[in-house]
Length: 458
Image (cartoon, rainbow, N blue to C red; front, side, top):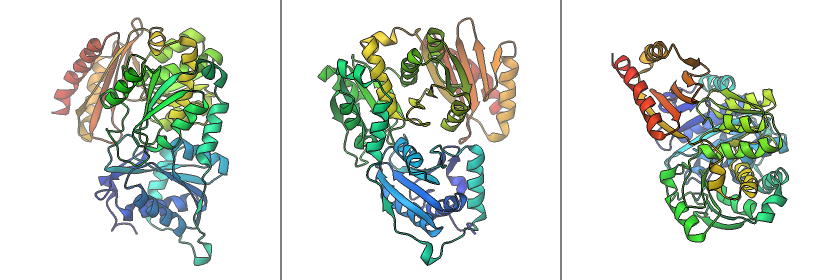
C-alpha cells in the first residue's frame, strides 16, 4: 500500500497533473509511486518520457523511469524537449502514453508530472481521477526480470516537431518578409527548438537566455514583469517582434516592435486571427479568455465556443466541434494542424504568418477594440464557497449569466464581463474582468470582492 509515502494532500493534484516542491511534497518515493500507477493504468506498452531543463529534472526522470520499468513498460527517453514535442511524439510512436516532467511556469524549486494518453492528449478529469485511484490502491502489478527492457532513446523528436510546424505554416509569406525576431526561452526546454524553428521559417534570430540548463534568469511565467530583458533586446536590435516562452514551451507571450510587452491575451487573438482569415470555423477557448476572440469571428465568420478553464477542457471541445484553432488567454495556442495541445512553437509560426500581412505588431493590435483586463482573488475556505457563489449569483441575477464554470456576468451591449470562479486546486475564488479600460475592469473586480468578503468571513 502507499500509506507510507508523502501524503498526496500536500501536493497540487489537479486536471493538470501532480505538482510540488522537490524535497518537500514531491519526493522520489511519491514520483516512483505515481509512475508505477501510470504504468499499471496504461497496462504496460510504450511510454515516452520527456522533461524540461529544471535542475531537479534528472532526479525526477530517474524515479519516473524506474517506476515505469517496474511495471513492465517499454520506456523511450526523449531527453530535454518542449512538452508539445512529447505529445507530438506520442502519436508518431503510437505509444501507450507519456509522462512529461515539468512544472511549466512555476518557479525553479517546483517540478511536476503530467500524464498523456495514447492520442498525445493529457488525461481528462475522469481519467486523472482513475489514475489517482490506482495510486491510492497501491496494488501495482510488478514485472518479472524477463519483462524489464532497457531504456531506449529518441533523438529525432524535436526535428520531427520542427518539420510539422513548418509544414503547417505559410512559410513563403514569412520568408518574403524575413522578420527580425528576439526569442527568450528562459533557459528552458524551448531553447532546444525555438531558434532552429525560427531560422527554418526564414527569420533573423537573436536568442536571449537560450542555454537549456534550467538556470532561470527570471520567473518562467511569460508575463510582463518577467520580460524586461526581452523588451530591452527588441528595442536595442530594432526587431520586429519578441517572443517569450515558459520553461516547457507551451505558453507564449509577445513583445511589440516598440519593446512593449503587450499581454499574453494577444497571443491567442493573433493566432486565431491568422487561422480564421484562411479557414473560418469554430474557435474554442475558455470562459476567462478575452473578448478579442469574439472580434475575430465577427471579422472572419465562425463561432466562439467557451469551455471551463484548463487545456484538456479546450482540447476535448475542439476535437468534438472540429475547431480550426483554439487555446487559452494565458498564451496557450492549440493548432490542430500541428497537434491538439498548447504549443508555443505553433503559436510563433502563426503570429509570424499574420505579421507578414499586418506589417507591425502595433498596427495589428489597433485592429482590435481597446481592452483592459484585471485579475484578483480572495481566500475562501471550501466550506464557504457555495455560500459565496450564491451571494454573487443573487447580486447579479438581473444580468445575463454564463454558468459554464463559476459565474460569468455579461453585459452584451458593451461586451464587458466579470468572471467569478472557485479554484480547483487552492482555497481561493478567482475574480477577473474585461472592459474598455483596466480601471473599469478593476472596479468590477473590486465590486465582486466586496460582495464576497462578508460571506467568506462569516
